[in-house]
Image 1 (cartoon, rainbow, N blue to C red):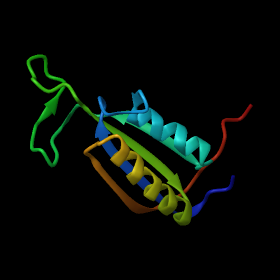
Image 2 (cartoon, rainbow, N blue to C red):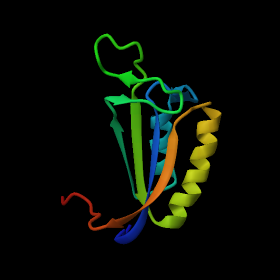
Image 3 (cartoon, one colour):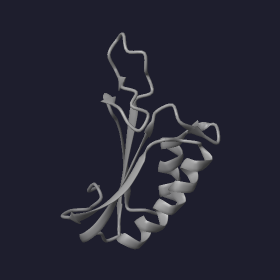
Image 4 (spheres, rainbow, N blue to C red):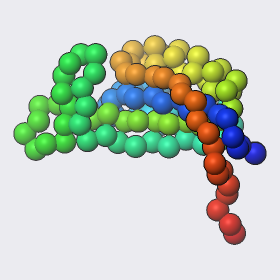
Length: 116
């Protein structure tokens, strides 16, 4: 796949404990993106957050909340990202998940495989 220049990034932020179909939601999102043949996905774990519920989530030892944020970033061309975002909205509803999902414009400077 060739990906260069104008593209879109879909960012989805959910709690690490969110589940759908007996697996972590973030994992289901990655495998759905792979099945949809999107250009790439990265998952990162946050160390502190708060969102719509105003509950602070932190890795601190004495923190009451352990449901840390997981950030999923997906980059591809605009149409594919828009279509996938619609699918992910339904998946998040199925998981009864809170969270944040948004799309932003990006300029891809490099996208290549690791040389063999």
